[in-house]
Image 1: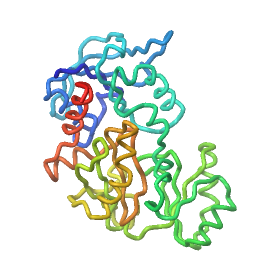
Image 2: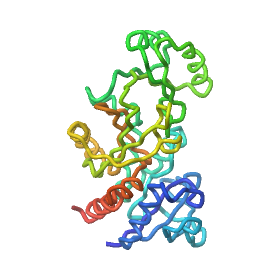
Image 3: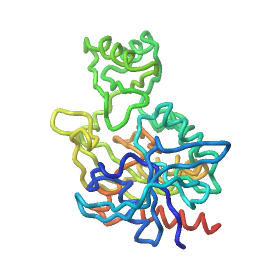
Image 4: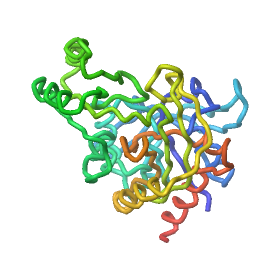
Length: 315
C-alpha cells in the first residue's frame, strides 16, 4: 500500500537528523513505498471549509548535511492526502491549538497522526492527572498560597511550566530554598498559565525513562540520565541516553494508560517514567525513536507505519 503522506513539522532543513524522530518517521515511510510532502505550520490554511498547505515534495536520506531533496513549492488540498503527520514541536500554545482545530476538518478521512482533537484535549502534564495513582504528589495552580502549602507538606519539590517542553524552565527547590517567589515571578512574567509543582523523586538521579507506545502498546524504552549535579535529563539540555529494559512497573503503567491512548487515536506516544511514577504523557511530537533504534534495533516508527497502513486498509 503506497500512501500519500504530508508532514507538518518545523523546517526540515534545520533539524538534527541524528536524533530527530520525525526524520526517522520519514525515512521509514519512504522505505515502505510511501511518498512524502512537507510543510511548516505557518503554511497551513483553512478557507471555506477547505484545508490546504503550501509545501514541497521531498526525498530524504540518512546523510548529515545532505538529508533532503525538495520539489517545487505548491499548494495542495490536504483532504487529498492519505495521512498527515502532526509533528511540529511545542510550545503547546494558541498557534498549536489552532492548527489542531484546522486539521479537525480533514480527520479521519485523511488520517492525522496523532488525532488532532485528542492532541488538543491531552496537554501533556494535564492528561496524566486523569489516571489516579500513577503520579508523584502533584499540584497545578497559580495560587501562591497553595504552592507554599504544598511545599510545606512535601519538602523538596520540582517546579515546571505547565506547557513547557524539553526540560525548559524545570527547577528543583529544596524545602528551605528562598528562590520560590522569584521563580514564580518569572513564570508569571512569561504567561498567565498555572505552574505544575511535584514532590521531588530522588530516583531522577538514576534517569528519566522514555517509553514509546504505538497504538497503546509499549515497544521499547531508553533511559535519559542527567548530567552531574543536574536533575533535568532531557537530551536537549545535556542528558545522555542509555539502554534500559522495561520493568514490571513500567508495563503496569502502560497497561493503565494504553487502552485510553488507543481509544483516542493517539497512535505514537512517549511517556516519561521516574522510578515508579509516570510524570508526563507526550502526544504532540514525542521523541526517542532514534536512540531506541540505536540501542535495541527496534524501529518504533516502522511499527507505527504498519499500524497506519492497517487503519487505512480498514483493519
